[in-house]
Length: 220
Image (cartoon, rainbow, N blue to C red):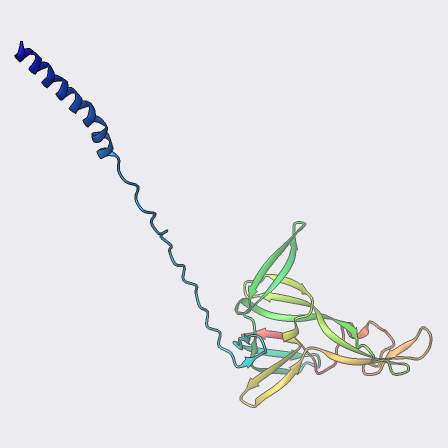
């Protein structure tokens, strides 16, 4: 009888130990949360562009890189000069019309055969009126560009860096110009004439520039 009671007590104790051990085992399987990791940040290195310059402004440096070309220049009076000229850009952006659409295209000067000025445009200088005399600046405004591949493009607008060029050859260097000035003299209410061009036609200088102005650049 005592043996039976002892076995029952032993059984109860074993069951109690098992019940108590369940939550302890469960707790032992619960992992503690990991501490937050620092985000993995990949550094992006910026590309530093070195700008070489000989000219400075108050805010930034300006690149003075030039592109030299071997050319032959033809002037209005048929004078021809050969030598080297330099541009601040190596290409020109043009628009041209084809099949009813306007196309934009960048043309390298290296691919150009010749550049011809077709027409000039008059710009009156503010405050230049002196009685009946008005000063006008004529800048190239319509150009024809022929490429070495035989393509022809028209360009309308001023190209400021082509207003004055320095041509260098074995004789030295000289300044050449694509623009000129003239004075419109008013002789009456509806009449007048150009002082330098010697013409009464107001539009005459638009296609007949000063004799010493260059009008064609042939690229070699």
